[in-house]
Image (cartoon, rainbow, N blue to C red; front, side, top):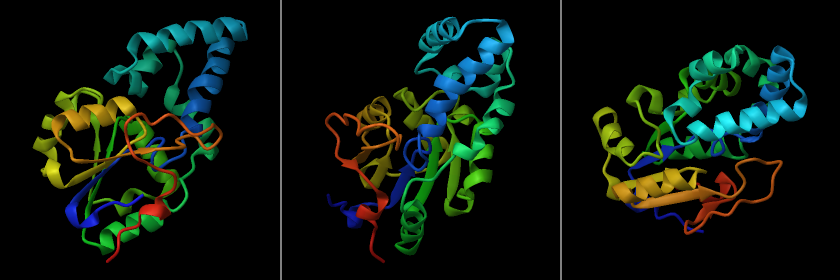
Length: 219
């Protein structure tokens, strides 16, 4: 797969599942939170999973789904603290730092654009040391709507001016890629294995990257 780097000035990068292994988040929400929720509220494992699945589904695709403070209130659990309990699972995908170095060397502007809440973002940047690799870091919580919402990209323009025709977005979420495509972002890549413990995902109509070493820009 070839990226036409001559046509790209700005690279917008997702965090969870794109630069970082989604195994941390999947384990946290599907295993760790249900375990702690069951302990806190005296539930069986099965009841805990069932209740949380319903709660998760009710806010999927909204800014609340990504909000640490929302879930802390809703579940009566200290979500930020619980994330720290399994922070050893936070991991960077292969070749990511080489890719980010190559973007800088090639004169491309790299911007981390994530739906993650600032508390999650801070923990992951602390654990990975990636913060210094970006020209800018923007959370959807600063904008007020998630990347799945088509209005997100116009609002992003007020924070980070970019030209859609010369912008590349790499993201593991098909709804996000489709909303960006609708806005006019011309270069789009999905991620084949957001979670390294799971099989490759269906990337729909998009080209996808299996590892960042395959798309390193030249100087």
